[in-house]
Length: 251
Image 1 (tube, rainbow, N blue to C red):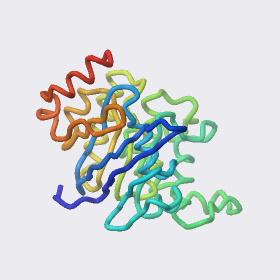
Image 2: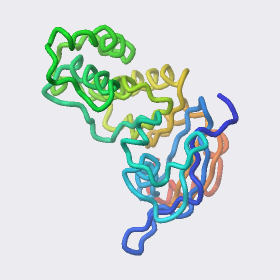
Image 3: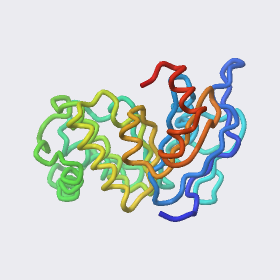
Image 4: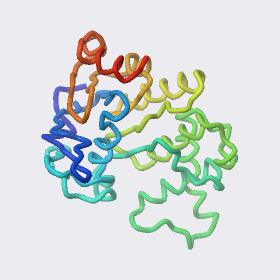
C-alpha cells in the first residue's frame, strides 16, 4: 500500500428531482489498499458507487483515476482503464457453466469480439487460464456446473473470477457479503484479502465485522455526506458514527 491516490472523488454530488442522494462527497482511495464505503440505509453508498463506475452521471464534482479525469466517461471506457466492478445481484450467465462464464470474460480481453463464430476447439485455448481463475476463487471443483446450480456464495465467487479475468487494477465490490452464510463470508473475505495483494479494492459493505477485519481505510456516509474517515478503530469510536448507526436502527 502506498500513499498515492489511485481514485479520487472531489465534491461529488448527485441530485434526483431536487433530492441530493450524494452531497459534496470527497475521498481518496490509496493504491494497494482495501477501502470500505459504509453507512446506514439511505446514506448514499450505492449511488456513490454508481457514480464512480459511471452508471450514473454526477450533478457536480469530479472523479479522477490515476490522474485522469473520468467524470464524463462511459462505463465501458472506465472498465477498459482498469476498473472492474461486481454488483449486489450476481451478474453471471445462469445457464452457462462456471468455466464458460470465465471463458467469456477472457475472450473479452481480445477487444470488441467475443469469438462466438470460432470452433469449440479454439475456444478451449482459454480453458487453462479460466481454470486457474476458478481455482483462485475456490470454485474449480464446480467448473462444469451451470451457474444457476451454484450456491449463492459460490456464485458470487464466480462473479469475482469473471471480473478478475479482465485484469482490473482496481476492483469495486458492491456488498460482496450480502445474503451469505457465515461459511461463505469467511471464504469470500479470505478471497478479497488474497486478491488485494496486487490490486486496489473499494467495497460497499453492511457487515461491519467484515469491514473491521479487511479494511485499511473506511469512509462513513450519512445522508449523502462524508461523516467520518479513518481506520476501523477510529471511525467506530466516533460519536457521530455511533449516533448515525443507532439512529438508523443498525447493530
